[in-house]
Length: 182
Image 1 (spheres, rainbow, N blue to C red):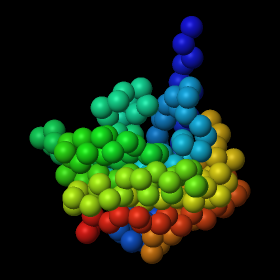
Image 2: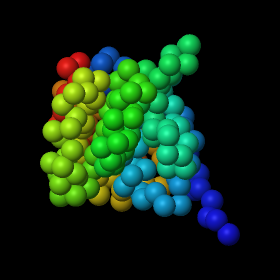
Image 3: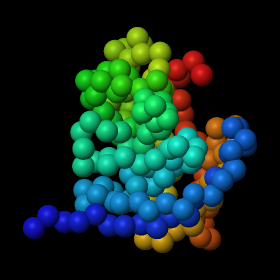
Image 4: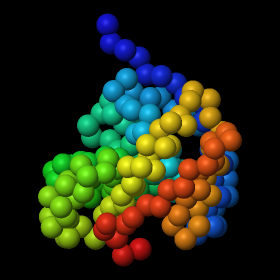
C-alpha cells in the first residue's frame, strides 16, 4: 500500500525588504513520502523568496512535468517556474522553454557543487535561468525545525534570510551561481 503525503500547516510571514513585500501566507503543504524535512524547508524558503499573490505550490514530486512552485498569468502562461534540487540538463532545458523565468534552488553541499560544475556550461544560453545555492549547514539546521504546525517568519534583506521558527533563528545566505540578468 502506498504511503500518503503528510500534511503540514504553515503560517509563513514574509518581510522582504529587497522587494518591499510584506505578507502572511497560510499554507497547507503536502510532504511527499520520499521528501526530506530539509527539502520541505527549502521549498518554504523558495516560496518566501518569490512570494506573491499568484505563487502556488504545484503537485511537485508526484509529477515530472511540473515545478515545485509556479506563478501563472491570468491567461495561463507560466511566468515563474521554481525547481528545487539538482535537475538534469534535459529538465533545465525543458523548464526554460516553458516559462518566462526559471529559478533553481540547489542544496546538498558538495553534491550540489559537482552537479553545477557538470551542467553550468550548458546553461549559458538560457537568459531566463537563475541558479541559487543554499549551504548544507544552513539547510540542515532548518530541517531540524520542521514540524507539522509551524509559524515561520522570514526576513529578507540584501539577499540574506533570517528564518524564525518558533523560538529558534536560522540564518541563510543564498549564493547566486547564475543570474538571469534581473
